[in-house]
Length: 512
Image 1 (tube, rainbow, N blue to C red):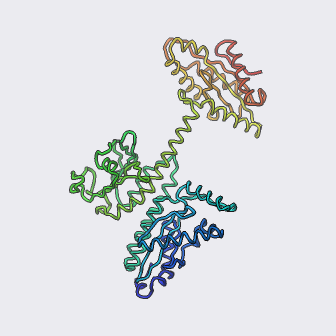
Image 2 (cartoon, helix red, strand yellow):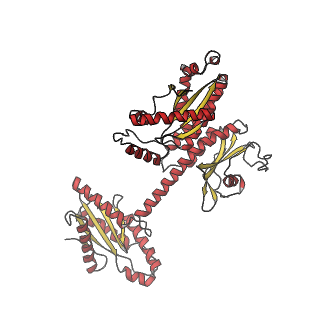
Image 3 (cartoon, one colour):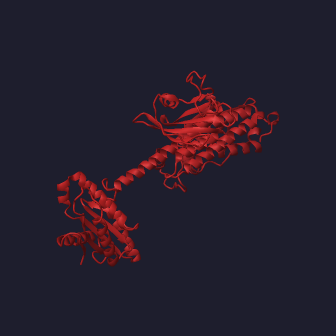
């Protein structure tokens, strides 16, 4: 902690090079994950929490870049001093940062925060610049990381507030320490929610962390359906742990609906006397105070976060609002990323499955067949393929109609899935044809599986009562005995199936 009598003994330069001040800057730098450097009024460096970020350090090793960087960075420092206020910037190399003028006992200095690229597009522009300057030996030695423009702006506001308050009155250091601890908490919470896997529930985790951050007890997180203009609750936490029935809120309705409509946060100290609301306190809530904020990514709103009932019974204040907004900005990105991942999974599933039966489609089966053949060649394990066709299915369709035929296809698909093993790959190959890959299976085992499969299907109850039983014919081939390419395997299993159908119904034929 900085001692309270520093201001009596040091002017700005001596204060900034003191060990206590350096320790303070390192703590702050680690909290915001941005390098902080101090420069004199003339632009000379006084100290830095690191010796440049890796990219800047590498750029400085190239004479062409060093001269450009020195000129550009110096201009930024001078501009922030002339304006007398913090500025955020994107430098010549497309690296984001901020410059904050500070004053103390009539002396001035500049605090610069050096970040990273804010977008992948900026990184591409940087690589174009390298090509333009004919720098070919620049290498990236680690994972590429980005710092969003929101993070830079939030960090700039935080650093500006903290440092100027500290310089104005060092005796208020305990307040600043509390702010840093909270920023640490936001960073820790953000790291925790970023690590959430797509099969976990990010909504409940974000809500729980938000409630913990504000020392509260209750809350809800709602996601906006932009097409319908309604909010759906995705996470709810109550005092007794119970989850109420799901409900929807339309844009403009209720408090959350108004937050969405206006795009503004509601900090309410007394719900019954706040002129924006003026309604009786809600049931099951201990206090009349709450915070309701829009979840934003840039200017786009994706949902609403509501926090109620401080554990202490106190009202929420501006500090609480600023704190939860800082966290919510990061959380919104994580939530949307998770939603995109789930959508991508759904799209992937749709691309490899048959929409009618839910089985894998022909394209996916062919890719898996290629993989299984490679495994056979590598490990020498047996592999068989079954192709089955429903007997007289055209007649069945003509008699009962395509809707009934579609229902029958679904029933057959389910019967096949129930009959085969978990390692087998089942697909609808086209029309009323199904194909099954049987890994680690020789012909004797394949025949046994085919017999069981045919019998199971024949015992399955089909749509329309009084209909004779549905049966299938099955062709069997093995790799590589019956063909050493995918094309030959498909051709020969089709021949085996054709031979089975020529001999009647409910038949099995092995290619020979």
